[in-house]
Image (cartoon, rainbow, N blue to C red; front, side, top):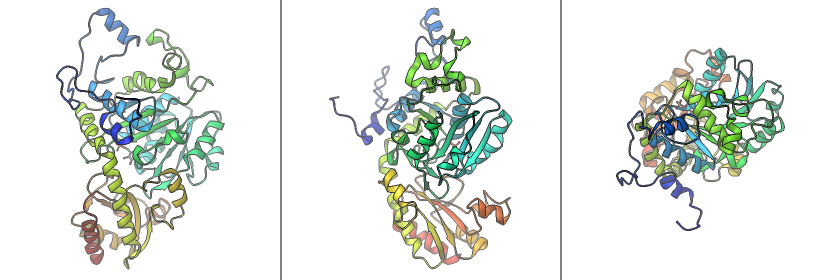
Length: 427
Ligand SMILES: *Cc1c(COP(=O)(O)O)cnc(C)c1O
């Protein structure tokens, strides 16, 4: 190709891929294989010692997975990436690379519910403490930092209402304290927002959602921004101290601005083990080819539906930052001028029973616990994900009895609205 810098749509189709060297196959094949023959014992030794890059065993690396990783690094503007089995596996491996028992990290409390569980319960068993702060108030993070703090974690658009985080302000808080900023960019995708451009050091995704985009595969990714100096302090020994099992090399020194991605692969993924299936990497790669088209349609449809609900007599309120009078709209225009994503909440007049009747009355829209599918999806948190909580606890979690969450799909918008209207009539 010429000197032109490829646009996002071109990268979504071509980055990392070339016709298969063995067969000429145009799209990346599914390398459904576990292990790879060494040329000789010297070759094997250099692979195991990290002196040469190459495939050894699919828990650590696989050719289909490698294309997915290069594509995501290109789309996010990072130096390298590591694809893993799920979004939760990505979060686990990132924090495993940064934290030891007794350390803490500061996270926005506006998070995907599964992440609240992972951080607050299971991570506690590793001796990792999460300290909660308010994504709407960057200064609330600074007050939680001490000398055992290792990172700050936020979502770009926070679940469930799509609150837009001021990433540049949080990057400043993190960097002033010598910490990396980790951004979960699942809800926005790099089509709408690229956190590294605003100061984030590490980006994670659940590929299960909009990037795969068709509700068919679990996956996750870690993107290394290449921006953070892991050797500036003694806080990150996995990166800044010699690794005996790799002949005493120091990962940050040897691999420079992609040392973090390497550490996640050769320590975290090697030892914790959540490798992505080659089939899933293939399906997600195919999904990413149409990400720009799908994501724009998701946003356009969501705005039409949110506007429609705003005027509806069965609807109490609509919380979507794409609406011009939303308090978050100015931040949205700064960070994501192409749209506010597909996920938002609204409140029904009539409370719990109305919520149950609404979700049961829908015909095209699917009642399930996911987001980011081509299909429009709905959940009534009070009767499902937040069922065990008291009324007061649900209110505090933003999942009050009348709250409904939508993930708007890419169907014909008037069809989505007609389905919602007939279900509202029953609610
Ligand atoms: C779904 C989701 C996750 C977890 O990803 P899995 O692929 O389900 O493990 C993390 N963050 C956000 C914002 C999500 O929506």
